[in-house]
Length: 367
Image (cartoon, rainbow, N blue to C red; front, side, top):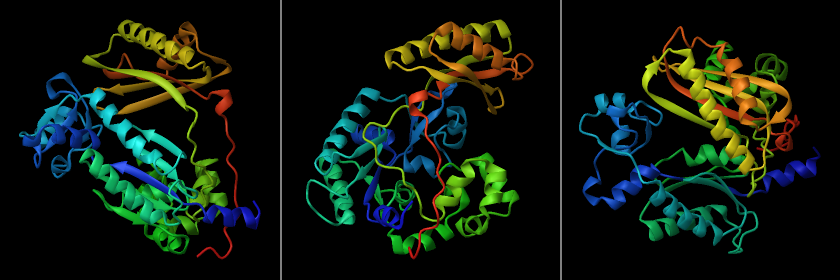
């Protein structure tokens, strides 16, 4: 990458907008009597449900997304549990998307409640991305009576981290001049792509923040994390060349089911895999996709998860082929010996979506 290309990266202006506790906030909007109270959206505690979103009042009790609703009930017995109204959430999401379109057409939705916007060139012809982010927050508040947090920076990674920095209703700006100091004090768990397992590997290397990560040689990162090591090497140096893509291709398609009762009968599990494979096949064919990698997710009765994957020589989207691959993967789990709570089948590695991870040199005189 040339110096001119690197300088062009620095001139980009990217905003990440993330709605604050979106589902729960919509419920509080529609039910004024719930405002100020702990609202938990998701499955019901008595039906082995899982928390989708918790209001900030509920989060004070330690409740978070993906937590079993039964656990959430124990933490907050007086919480208001709501199954949710996806049609309503989508309606408001479309109104928010229309507000984004007032500023730019370069919009990349990440989910129903968050998106990247490239405002380097924008419809309001304003040079200040900070002002545009503030404008978007105010327009969302006026139009929906909901709050959003915004992050502004010169790349997607930093913009997303920034939007989470001062929730709710926060606005954080990370300029090229500020990026190095910001990244150095950032906890390793906050870096994109670093989950619990990866964080433990970093801790073994005595890496706890960006400063520690910056000091690691590239060779160590590649040896420990493979190709992902190059990504970590780059982002701690403020390098993320990913563009805001309005039509980003799908990375995977899948379906999963949480069982009403824990199961250790392999015949039942295999039948469920067949049913899920049919649903995934229908989705793939509807999207005109086929994938080389089949994934099987199993959650045991103690809530621990395993993910097993197999890469086939050719891309598939046929239900029988998906089911055959998933059942082969089942043999690499403890299902049957341990009771199973959740089963998921997905397909990924779509040939048209393959990308390369490139190593960029450190940006000269960035900071």
